[in-house]
Image 1 (cartoon, rainbow, N blue to C red):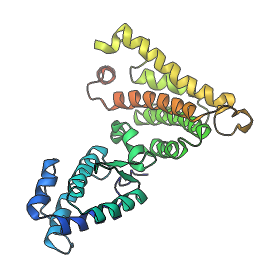
Image 2 (tube, rainbow, N blue to C red; image 1 turned 90 degrees about the vertical axis):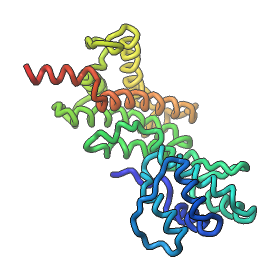
Image 3 (cartoon, helix red, strand yellow; image 1 turned 30 degrees about the vertical axis):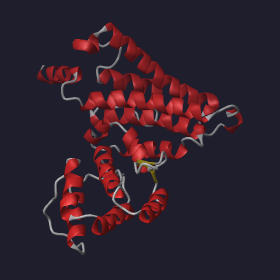
Image 4 (tube, rainbow, N blue to C red; image 1 turned 180 degrees about the vertical axis):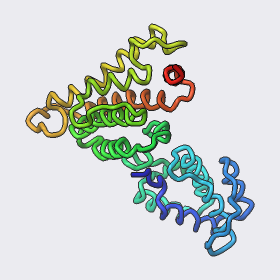
Length: 284
């Protein structure tokens, strides 16, 4: 599984068309360059000089990167300022169907249940993994479940912690029984292997008492997500869902995201203490 484009092709075509009617080459260059983009200089099959020039800037956008896409939305806002009230009303309706809000000031924001929101919530360190498929799939499940199905969200949050622990151990070549390994053991092993267990000695802030207490709490958070699910508040326990509200789903998902973020960021950090320890062990 790969992260899909955060801006649908119809949206890109819509603003490309607007650029041909409401802008000039000089203004197009200014819009994009103000947001840090440069034209690719590559030929394309767009009809018209302005459309083709706009497309050259699009060629240098990473459409799966929330940071890039946020800057593109600022480009779109500049163009929106130049169109007629009639075209603005049409654009607002079109963008609503595509998962974006255009407010009264012309600001463009993704709706909460879009792919953009899901990807923006993901740790950027996912890119360092050889195979993030399990984790990406669970982020998508969580995005579909919130806020209407808190039970599903809780179940998927528990699975996200488990999938992250397994993925990290696999990345490191650490052996474990995939079918029989229990969540507490996976959490403990993943944190120990990354030097994130409160009993692990580490230099700098990682070895401070404050960080150790936080890491102890982090372990508890991950374990409690599994316990919440297993007590009947997750998927598959319909008789126990009385009183379950969206806030409970958000609580579990937020806690799972925190644990996964710390684990994955530490795995990807080239200067993390666990790398020094691993190098010393290999040399020895």
